[in-house]
Amino acid sequence: MRGENGFQGIQGERGETGLQGERGAVGETGPAGTQGQVGLTGATGATGSAGANGSTGAAGAAGAAGAAGAAGAAGANGSLRVYGDGSAGTRSIATNSALNDPNAQYTNFTVSAGTTLTVYSGTVVRCTGNFQNDGTMIVVPALRDHPRFGENGSRPTTISSGGLEALGGLGGKSLYAGVARRLLNLNLLGGGSGYRETTDSGGDGGGNFAVICSGAVVNQGLIAADGASATGPSRGGGAGGIIILASGTSVSNSGSISATGGLGGSLLATDSNLNGFGAGGGGGGGIVHLMAPSASSGGSIDVSGGAGGAAGGAGAITGVVYLGGGSGGGGGGLGGDGGTINPGNIGNGSSTAGQSGAQGLQFITQADPVSIW
Image 1 (cartoon, rainbow, N blue to C red):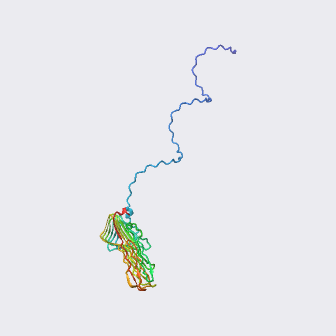
Image 2 (image 1 turned 135 degrees about the vertical axis):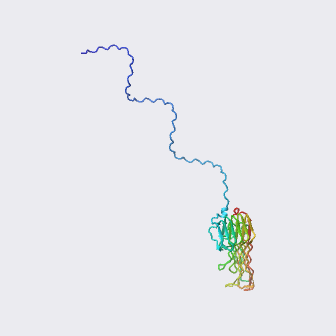
Image 3 (image 1 turned 30 degrees about the horizontal axis):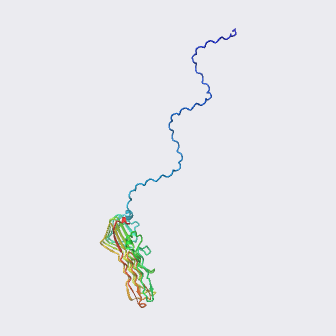
């Protein structure tokens, strides 16, 4: 049997450290220590991608106005407005007819010799090219209720049955020459009509007609806008109308242009009511205007007034109540006054002639219509 252990002896000196043994397994993580001091800031990292746009802020106050820009180039002149665009093409009239085209903007316009073309008052023929009339162009008189550039004729101013004179109506007033020269945009303006009653007619005033072309305007025929003559006794003649021929190049007239006043009506000895009437006054002459850088007329231009009705000697008026004649319409010239009755013995009166209408107006203006129209 093994005996009991003896007393432990005195510890000997410590021997040299032996070789390090293999690392043991990692123990559990101990509790976190206190945070150390903040280290130095590291280098800036790369920029991240842009975030979404925020909502738009309120608009700021408007800035001061900038300086005005340079003026733009000048626009085209008014030739399109004056001469039209030529969209109706070329128009050649070779048979008797009336001009009813809804679009009167032509390239060229021609009326052949031996042809009569009726033109309604207010017509304006525009051409990008040329106009030539070798035929006859008749402008229809304006209607009485159309606007007027002259005054309509008036009724007799007095009625007499007691031996006193019965004066005729005063002639329709005319335009001043300075105003007439500037009358270019005519619309439906016509000459003044002669005095009339509801049951019979004084003459209608002449209508208006204009030609405005970029190229040459040539008249070798007849263009007429005459006032109509009275169709009843003691009534006035209508004033002549207006004709304007204008070109950006030239206007020449070797034919005839007419805007004359109409004739006044005759006296009336007596009617069924035993009224006697004096003779009617003639219509005033109209207006003719040629306008171009080169405008001339070697032909005729007639703007004479119409003659009044003829006088009647003693016994020409057999009525017992007397009225003077109605007057003529005014235009470029004054309308003529109506005739005055001198009753003499009852049933044995006389009448002066109706006054003739005054000469109208004609102008030749050497200018480009684009600069004036």
